[in-house]
Image 1 (spheres, rainbow, N blue to C red):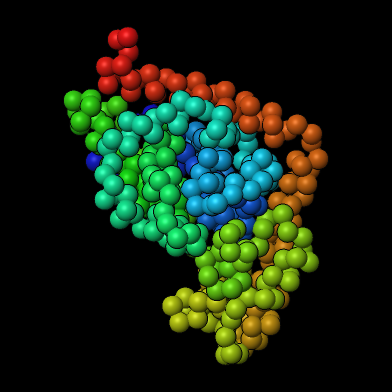
Image 2 (cartoon, rainbow, N blue to C red):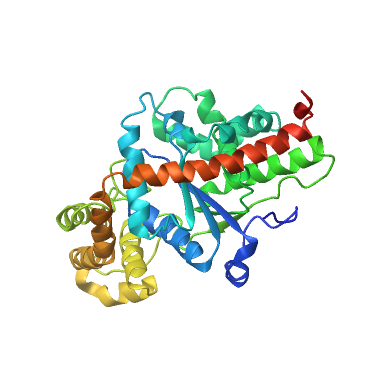
Length: 349
């Protein structure tokens, strides 16, 4: 299930589709709140597509990572359930995707120790995603857990020998860090033997969507359209979206980010180019654009919300799914940890 070393950082979607059995996906979410439209177009649809292509998929609900940049853990158990329901509603099938929580797989987290020995403090401090997360958190200092966040993600990916990671472009530094950990482990501890392959990133066609306040859509910023939001809630959020004073509608992400984000959302829902949406609205102004976006988003999410409600009504569904996933993930993680300990000479006592 591993790729050869020195593979390119970015995977070719055509190659993945042509030979899905070569790949194993690791993906996941931090359970800090309900997933939103940015997750849906940025990662969830990618996951579902890969799953349907026949790519073996592991989905981690990263509950330990909630406290990387928060003073309080919040309602972790409730948020884990919300995240699982959102994934199921989007189309994740637990019969072909292993869904589990971080805290349920101790052997995975134990891999962090040898992996930390392969990463310098300076490398972690330079990681742009760590810097962004620290700035967004509003905390005065960076915790050790946040600083080592990229190594936690390396353990997530490598425990199951994942070699394909669907990400937005802001997560590429984490994939690069994982590749570095894999390479160094093989060279430093395994004498050049390919114990771990270097995973590739698979970019989403919509890596970053803006929230209603013009900043990146985020659970923590309160600017996101949650997948479980009602049609009326969605309409109210879209009406609040930041646009500009010009009446003509155009697609210009650099010059008109707010308008262009709405145009892109509509285009993603309709399956057309953003320029086509802009031309359709034309001189109708922001009000017409927002009305169009509201209609197409609610139509896109209608079946997702219906499935979510049905799954939420099944008592014990999420708990049972997570138990089954943790059992499978634990078996794989324990085997990988045993291999690592054997390489390090720890199996002789």
